[in-house]
Amino acid sequence: MIPSEGNTHTEAEEPAISDPRTNDRIRVPEVRLVGAGGEQVGVVPIETALRMAADADLDLVEVAPNSKPPVAKIMDFGKFKYEAAQKAKEARRNQANTVLKEVRFRLKIDKHDYETKTKRAIGFLAQGDKVKAMILFRGREQSRPEQGVRLLQQFAEDILEYGTVESNPRIDGRNMVMVIAPHKNKSEAKAELNARRAEEKATRKAEKAAEPEAAAE
Image 1: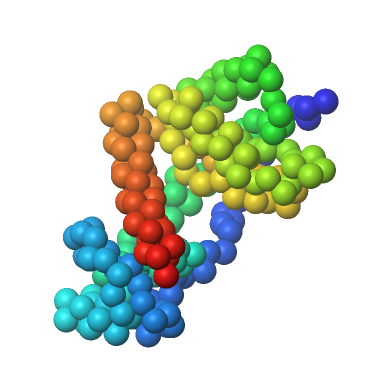
Image 2: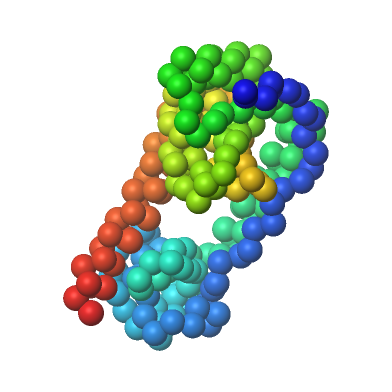
């Protein structure tokens, strides 16, 4: 039996996010370097990457630590953190009195139930409320979080016309959650989706490019 959806009022709480390693904190022999303009420089010794960042008066930031070798990008990290903090501050201000609606899924959900919950979520977004989509894992399902991520990503695609992802899928106890916020118009939603896809594509491209060299080694 699927628990009933309920309403909760959001509190000003956010998951703690650790800063990525930067500059001399990146202690690996080499990195796959992305330039300040997004260009792929290739695999270079860490000393070379640090020197290039210093020459540009910018920082070297590790953006994909689990890749082999890790992916690092040259950027203004201080500016990046400031802009991220401003966005978070604005988001907290906007959600001070926002009602957060919950829509709960099981990992093995049938098509009819999925469509019903999707329509309910669309209704919440259309009236200006945020939606907290939650995957309820049972038993061994907890060992397959990637399936929960795929389901939530599909859900986000299906309601794109009405809302956009504010908080990406993350584990919360025995569950996985994602927050969708209503957006102002369709063009804004499309722009956000394209930007997110471009960012994901760039990361996948960098990680994929690292695979042949890793295999050769």
